[in-house]
Image 1 (cartoon, rainbow, N blue to C red):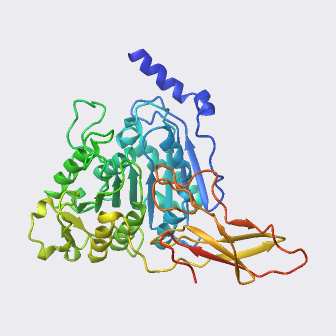
Image 2 (spheres, rainbow, N blue to C red):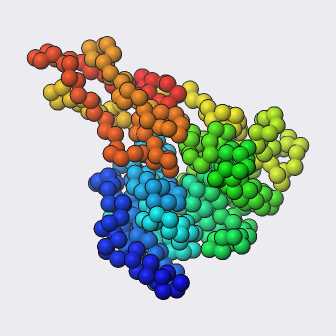
Length: 445
């Protein structure tokens, strides 16, 4: 067995493996995008898989205040989907608002290989991640990346990784959203490769949201992912019983797919970054103000929904309550917990830089922070011409302009903001207008 293990490690570290991997097709990384890639290591304790890190730097940011990490899950398909994470317009809107970089790793895990060898950060991915921040800081001209705090989002094994980073570096983590995956505090005899973490008091001040699908052991207790909820419940219960800033938002519609979680996750991270990032970059993260917190009973869909209340008015068991940052987050959490229909009353930003070359239109647009970007309406001479795309493709939630993969990242090839008017009259000058529409149907002005 030892010989086979060593041979496998050498195989995945070889140039032959890198050439034959399915990870060699990815969007071009020209500024404001930057990329580094590290080969696999055969040194014990270091990362045994190659890894690709892509980062987006907001062009308007003079100094980076933090790094938002969008971490994919386990398996070859999910790992490959990480190649487009930094190109997601909706997550870029969050990053831009807070002068943060948006980073998406892609661990090149072979199919059916041991996911723990990257999603447990102690197996080399912590060191590789911190190295990439220093290297990308040099490439982008933002050396502050190496010491900036992190806001972590992770799906499945990525949730295990993000939670593990909270355990290891609580002083660096502004907040962590764990979709369908959490680290463990006790060793599981059935999974000896999953090592237990140690809970320290410093972790208790980090805002954490556990986000399992209801079909992951909450209402469906026999499905493929039925073990997700018991692990989430144990993780949540351990931290909350010690007064930790942790909540649970059960997705009432899904199993392991990400569904509509981004419409709560992005606004939750927005609130956490607002509360925690210091005004002067480089200073320690701010402590969470507990006076504004709301509490709610854990809602598992088995009883009538009970709305959150201000922490001072909560009469239940606080050690088992869902912790919510403030009143606004409590409202959004309530909407999400019922049917994921997180509301929005603000229109998206209007498209900019509209150009016409012959009969081809192109433009730029930013996503709506609250509701993302669903499609564009194109008008010619004041009348409707087209909708782009005609139908958004997202089998896991609201239709969205960039389309979404299983791990909540845009599909390849990336959709471009371009339209060819094949019915334009030759020799006639037309006036065009492009309108952005978010995922709740609101149009830009």
